Image (cartoon, rainbow, N blue to C red; front, side):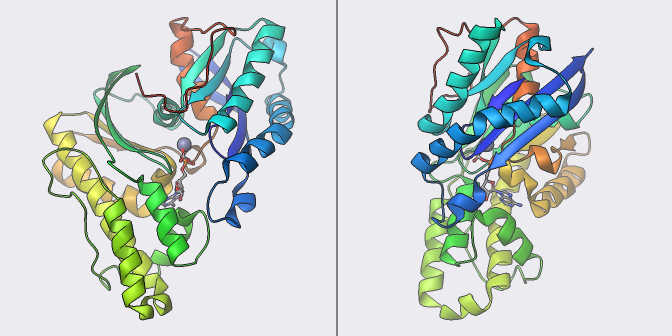
Length: 335
Ligand code: KG4
Ligand code: ZN
């Protein structure tokens, strides 16, 4: 059983593993999107209060849907970071209490590792080395994975995350929150060549990204050209095109250098169909021996099934943390 409360989703899930065959028995989520939409972004204090209200009902629902009881499970997994400290603490304290009362081993999971493992929920026989493009509201990273639990970060954003940039651009265009899915929908009706926007760091020699310059360019474009607000579909398409171009370009370049067998997309932005399509197209064209994989839509944005999936690989190694030692780490790095 797993718990995820790192940001604004309260989630719990029960998974069954049988000789590496994974069955998601339940994956329950209570989303706070509507609550935070009126602020145009997540308010940590509000998020924490909601987690407190939802955590027990969501866990109860996860067990009910899975048709099982807490006494039947093998371990409890919880995300301990990275994320908002006041949100993380609710999930962690709940997991700790349950582990103590029901005498279950406790597994401390990194949120980024959970996103990476969303691919193991969806795809069979993933071959290493894997290059993970992890793109969410808080992170944009290229992570080389040589085996289960063996990670090397080879690039990251130097400022804003890709998802954060989608959210901020949507805010500037006054089209709602969260921005990613709204921009994607409007972009489908727009002309991606209508506006010229920069592709920050596309030619840099490293595998890092930068999205704050693109966000500033959007701010100035809207300030100086009011007609954009009448052509929002075109502007969304043009913005989405450059943001995706940078992500795809660096991922393909890194995949060639590290000779990876698999390119795996994950994180909230992985829900973007245009990003999936572009990566698929270029992988096929330039890296014919490399597989390109991505998670099912429901496992892209924050959920607890991906947490339990990552936990399974720790469970096999008996990588447990005693309830008295587990701690939240809002800046937890992928170790
Ligand atoms: O992984 P996630 O649920 O939370 C974090 O760990 O940050 O990702 C949320 C982010 C938001 O910034 C949201 O705008 C973005 O993922 N997102 C998308 C799409 N769906 C969600 N971005 C682009 N296109 C989408 N379809
Ligand atoms: Zn996330």
